[in-house]
Amino acid sequence: MTMRARSPRTAAAWRIVPLAAALMAALPAMAQFKVIGSDGRVTYTDRQPNATDGRVSALGARTPAEAAEPELPFELRQPASRYPVTLYTTSGACEPCTAARQLLKQRGVPFAERQVVSAEDSEALERLSGAREAPTVTIGTQLLRGLSVEVWNSYLDAAGYPRESKLPASYQYRPATPLVDRRETTTVRATPRSEPAATINRPSPAAAPTPGGIRF
View: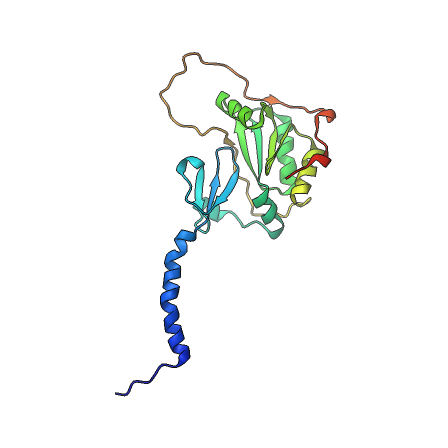
């Protein structure tokens, strides 16, 4: 039987196969990781993070909960990735916390909510923000204590968030979680302390930062 010579195009295709296989094998080494820290902030890295860095997920390998979330529209992708928003509230009756939550939802701002429900949470909030005031919000690296609608909107505008909600109707905000992860422990404090969870802050106009001081 006579064998036909391969055409140049066929020979080139056969040479590509081993190269493609090598690239596929190298893909895990180029994986990107998303890390959600204990304070709710999101960071991205091309190196395998440690378990102590926070909740880690590989991009492109979503957990079932993340896969169920609709993808953010184009108008929100960049601000949400560059300037993630975290709202810090307190449990119980807190009218400013409710108003802050409504403000973010009315603008369609994707945000994580961390809640003060214990003395440990209150201490964690003080370490993070320098005070025990609720509500507090972080927009990227900016931290704002106390609700001031005008100031919050100014910072959200500067971060690029739309004034009107662009979220799909199926989008659901995740429930609030405590600042400190709850772990079972047998350690008993020698001198238990009773501390207020957080101070509800009702800011005065003079305490609010000026929009001209916005920096990202």
